[in-house]
Image (tube, rainbow, N blue to C red):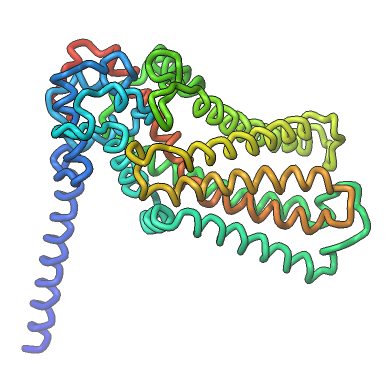
Length: 403
C-alpha cells in the first residue's frame, strides 16, 4: 500500500510539474515581440534610428525614413520591419554627415543588413536549416545540387539510359511524368509551406493592421518595379563610390522576371498536359519553350550581373556574414539557367538523359533552399512594403512602437 501511495504521489508531483511547465511555456509564447530584449545588431539599429529621427536629412530617400518618423521609439518588431523595408541602395550612407569616421558612426545600410540576416534565421522553418544555410550557403547550395544531380544520374545509369539514341526531346522516356510531378510537387510544396510559416510569423510580429485594396496596389507596384532601388531620386544606387547607377535594379529585374518566366513556362506546360492533352516535347516555337528560353536568358544575365556587383560592393555597406548565403542563391540560379539552356540545345542528342538529370537535380536544390536563402528576403520585403502602405493610410499613425 505504501508503495502504491508513493507511486500516486510521484505521479501527482509529475503532473503538477508538467502543468507548471506548460503554463510557463504559454506565458512565454504570449510575450509580445516588442517586450523581448534586442540583439546587439537590433540595438545598433535603434541607436542609429534615434539619430536619424533627429536629423531627418534623408527623409525623402526611401520608405524607411518616413516609417521611422512615425515612431518615437524602436522595439524589436519595429526594427525587424524597418530592416526588411530597407533596400540597401546606399543613398543615405553616401549623403550622411554622421557616417564613419564621424563619432556617431551612422551606417544605416550595413546595420539594417545585419538585422535582416538575423530575421532570415529567426523566421526560417525549420530553424536549424535556416541557421545552417546562413552560415554555409554556398557550400550547402552546391553540395545539395551536386548530390541530387548525382543521385538522378545514378538512377538513369542503372536503367542503362545515361547515353542513348536521340529521343526527340521526350523527357518522359527518361523520367515518367508522374514521377517528375511527384518529385517536384514534394519539393515545391515544402518550399511554399516553409516560406508561408516564416512570413506568417513575421507578419504577425510586425502588427500590420488591415490591408486595404489601395495599400495592396501600392505595395505590389513598389515590389514589382523596385521603386526604392532608385536612391530616392531616380538615378539608382551608389555602388563603389558616390556615382549613381541603375545596374542593380536592372539585374534584379532580369533575375525576378526571368524566374517568373520559367515558372510560367512550367505552369503553361502543365495546362497543356492536363487540360489540352498536349504532351511534351513541345516545339521550339511553342509558348512553354519560348517562355522557358526567355526566362533562362534572364536568369543567366541577371544573377551574373548581381554576382559581379556583389564582388565589387563596398564592404562598409554590407553584412559580410551574408555573402555565403547571397552567393549560394546566385550560384543555384546561374546553374539552373545554364543547365536548362544546355538541355534545350541538347534535347535531340544522345546526351539528353545526362543533361536532364543534372538540370532536375539543380532545380530541386534551388527550390529546396528557397526558404533559407536570399529568395526569402523578397518575401519579407513585400510584407514590409505592405505594412508601409498600410501605415500611410492610418490616422494618427505616430507610434511609440508596434503593439
